[in-house]
Image (cartoon, rainbow, N blue to C red; front, side, top):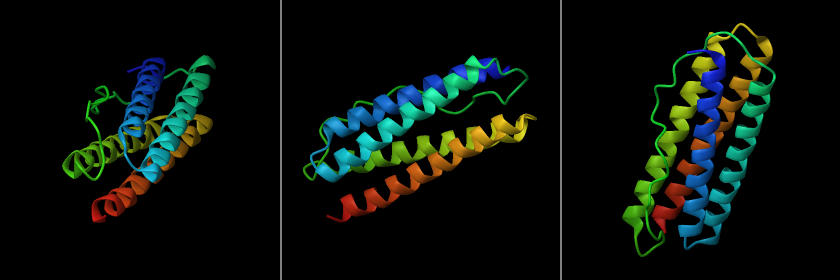
Length: 145
């Protein structure tokens, strides 16, 4: 897949992730979880802007195909203590998607010869790792309550 196609698909993935987190923030009953999901939504928007700016620079070459699950936001209904099973599912889906993004960005970093692009993808992979860790910690805290 050429670099422009990969970057375009990655931008769409980040935008969908942002929308998922906005939906989760709106659905949560707890302020701490609303704040977490809102922060993650903003960070995904930053990722999309970074990828867009790199695409605008006219990146060329080939990068790995995007063969990770990039489907849209799931409708999960109201989240809170009254529906812990939905909250657990939402966390599992979000963590899985962050890990898929992390793996994608790691593969893209490994595939490019451009040092600047490699660093961009490494930075994005690191951010996705942080997202996954924050989600895991929040899920443990929320489900323990």
